[in-house]
Image 1 (cartoon, rainbow, N blue to C red):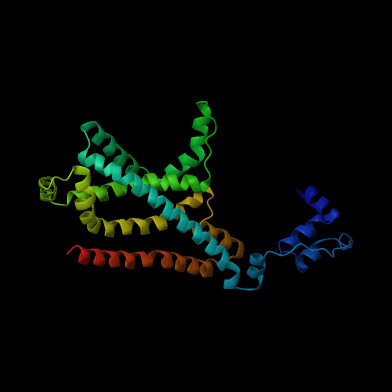
Image 2: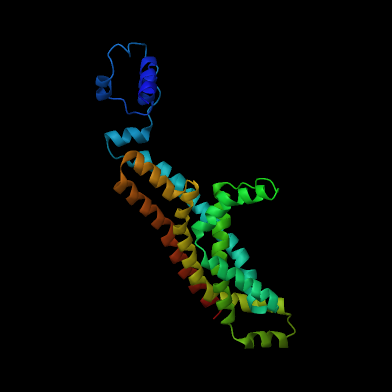
Length: 278
């Protein structure tokens, strides 16, 4: 290591690298032999704004754009994952309620399996393990991007919770609703779509909103598979600038700005649908 650093000093590379990243200072100059850096150094690489800010002081404008980029990734990840969870959860709930015995067993196994394993373990399997398994069995290397692995992992995991919410909400509708619709000549699917599901939504909405808020926070786990969402962006910026408190407060504020309005929206929709169906 000493020999390598010596060669970098002789060629002037060490000074160029240090100046590029904004960490060259008078102390570095004193440690180097005075005749090694007499070459022309008129061209200087631009200094990273974040590192410069860590030396000069806290500035919100230097960090906020990067945090907003991470927040946008968090929003996209949460929305796409929850949409996948709802798309899977409803068929699983219907299978448990109205399916034949073998289908009910499969649906129950799905719910118990994905509720029983940590979501982080599932992300590791999809991102690191799945390519090895597919390659081992001669199926090629099925490699997922961090975003794709996170969407599938969160979608499969939260679908198990959504299935139980849907099942409880649908089961809460009195059986007389089915009988009344059947007496009018309505088929089972039509009864479910026009009679049962609209009433169940009022029961489903609050716990679904809670799950969506929980998913917003759980997306921070995706940083473990190198997805640069809001939490990962906070880790990178705080470690490079040592502004753990300041950047942490801004990050927490962004999480609150994304999650708190969902509660208000849920209560608004619940009140509106309750009045419309009264």
